[in-house]
Image (cartoon, rainbow, N blue to C red):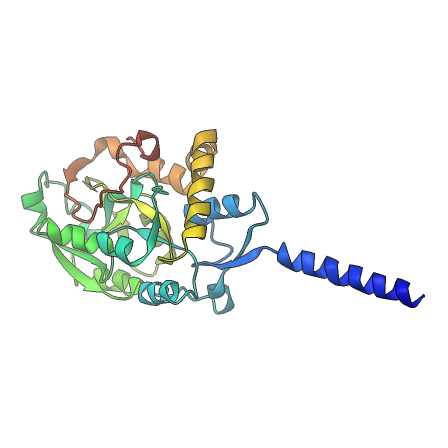
Length: 284
């Protein structure tokens, strides 16, 4: 009997050890778990395909999004495992980028939020020199800020994203350029301010929006790269992209065919940018 009890105990310990060894590793990621935007939709699709990892959203605890400064520090300290943002040379030096543009370059297609009374602000603008007469509002640390400044556009910078909306209404700057999937939801959310989407102009530059992980986390980077490429090869990524409400609304509302396009140079592109992979980019 004693032998049977010992055998059962050893078996139980073995099962527990096996279960622990095969437990999914927790990944701390930015944002909220109930966020339905494209990066989280894609990330959940990847993670749910197997039990290698499970997602945890630290911001859920206090329902306040971390600032970009904090996110960067958290990734470098391994407190956050995955973030997503528009790339730059500095981001790719600081973190390990997953070189799949999640929005297929759509966030480099910029339309402006303006005050209601300035809805036709750009109705007579047809070139970059004319646009330089106006002041844009942007986040202090955003890659877009460097792109606009490189093209000699005046930029009013603010560290906190949420402050840009009252600043625009208060005429601290003239327009707030946003990627085409972004402005309508933002205006709805910030409905206390008298803001609309400007209908005439499209500011365009090549701007990949990537997942980023800690520079030393090659294993996670490899996992995400393999999973994303598998979705692309199977056609699932295209299906997710085309059926996503964020993308459908952007294409429907942006009226791209009737906008004047002003092209900008992006000095932040690196040699790793997958320009040659045409299937990774939105073609309007």
